Length: 62
Image (cartoon, rainbow, N blue to C red; front, side, top):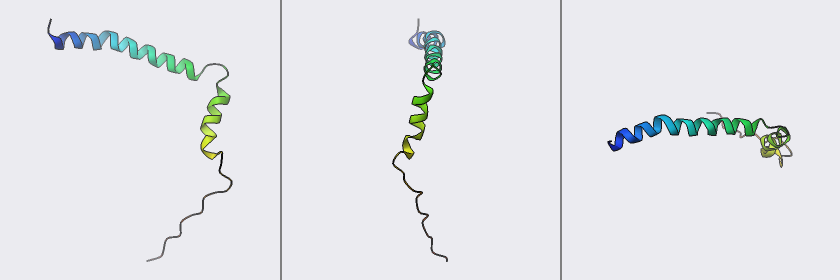
């Protein structure tokens, strides 16, 4: 069997199965019970040390 044909069959079957299982695993991990608080904390982490809005830069009129 040629190398290309072997790799093509491998990608068509086992790689597709592995990627599908990985995708399902990520979805189950994200939607597991009790993860809402962790996801909310991660989403708001960029605002944790912000005490006031950033000042707008003043552009000179041309």
